[in-house]
Length: 184
Image (tube, rainbow, N blue to C red; front, side, top):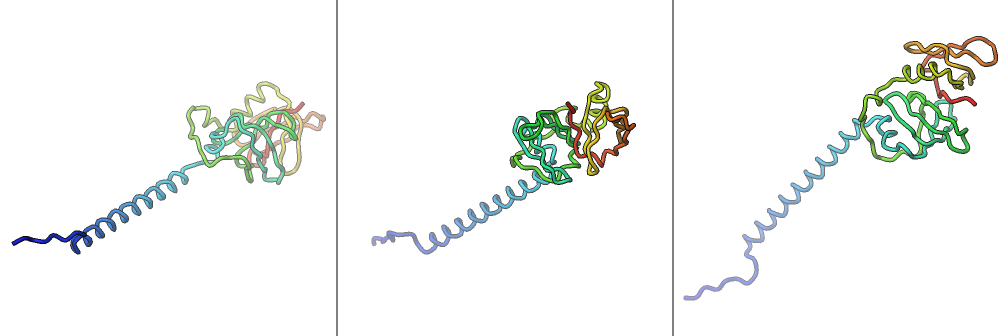
C-alpha cells in the first residue's frame, strides 16, 4: 500500500504557522511599546541645560520673559545659565542668560548632552562674582529696564550694580534677571 502525501501544507501545519506568526507579531509589538516607553522615560530626564549643551557652537534665538529675542552662538551652558555670543542683529557682546529667564528657544535640536564637568553645575552667583572681580562693565536687564554699570556685590540670591550714570547702586534679585551683557 502506498501512501499519498499531500502536496501543500496540512491543516495542522497551517494552524501552527499562523499561531507562530501571531506570537512573533505580539513580541514585536511589545518590543516597540518598550522602546517607546524607554524613549519617553529618557526624554523625561532631559533638562533645558542638557538641550543647550547639545548645541554648543550653534546659533540659537532665545526669547526672554519680556518677549524680546536674543540671538547668539551658544558658548557654554550650565545647569542655571547659558552664555551666548551675540550675532547680528544683536550686539557682538557676550550675554549671560539665566535659564529661569527663558520663555522659548528656537534652534535647539531634539538631542541632549548631559553634564560632563564640574563647571556644568556652577551656579549664577560664581559667574557673576567673576564679572565683579574683573570690574567688567555690564548691562543688567530686568523686566523694569536696563541698568548699565559694574557689579559691586553678589549675594546668595541678588547682586548690586553700581550705576555708571552716578545715580548710586541698584539691587537686583536673581529671579528678576533677564540677561547680563557685556557693556561697551
